[in-house]
Length: 445
Image (cartoon, rainbow, N blue to C red):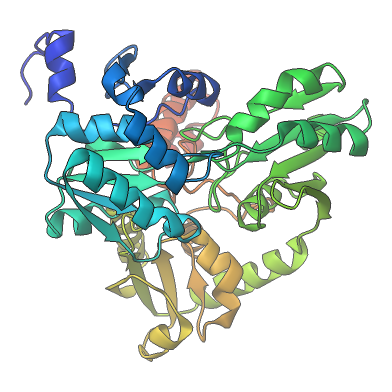
């Protein structure tokens, strides 16, 4: 049992802090602070408030560093070099690991050159595929001898206090032509419409930038949030679900459809549009909701008949959550199902076909593997949510839940303790009211 908490002064607390990441709660304020040369450090668990450090003037005004940034990196990409240099020097480390998604790996060598030159450190570039923040690979970085990991291109999905080494998240905000985005929206949508804006973390700042101007022309402009994500941010597996009767159209800012599709799956009745900031094209988008639901229901029904279930724990970075694995094993044991557990970094039909005695699979990696590619596998490949439906411990939802990393997710998500606490509260409320004792007992169990 832990003893009473001891007060630690601010300076000492700052010195003891091992990680560093961006505060996601207010991306606009964070962007302003970065422009002012400040590094934002989030509050630790249990702490109130936030501490803001200023990057030293000698780093901000280093002409050689500024010249290197201008020559090696695009001006509209914010790699937060000054803050990273300061963080490396402050940590007094000798080896730094850099992890970037494939779309940013072209900048890995220039970044390594800058840090080697201005921080006198060895730099390791992690070249394995990185699909999202869930793929943060602190374990590999530590195994290779790195003392600090800089993860680019994603928000702080995996808390730094759960990593095995100090981690710095860099969103890499990309400055786009906000005026053109604004004009495109004004040109394509009527002033009477109620609009919803979403994006990836790179462009969320642009949404907040144009929102006040849009509010002058439209009935309502909503920037939704699925905590712990930032307002307006969507992932391929997690998107906010909004009231369809309160929104006339959703606008996604970004290249590609992967993240937009998550928003469309979570809100199937809202017309969707995509603005590509690179081509500057606004397009109407569609999704085959009926076909997707048919495929997933069929897979669930077939899996329910299987006597042997294979559980896949994804090992690509932090993709596989052991807490979900534990919950799945307990559910299968309660249902009397035989199961085996395998670890995989990449889940492919050819690999799973080698296990011929497995009647169905459930993967703890990414729900979109099942939704997008499940029909290609020789036996059903379920997500953690779909397994609960197959075992009849959760109900099928006609609006498919895209809440894998949302704090409000069911027992299939990354915050199962939140769901169990919610169910206990509901049970106590039901028992105290005496209105549904049978339902209360079910919830409590």
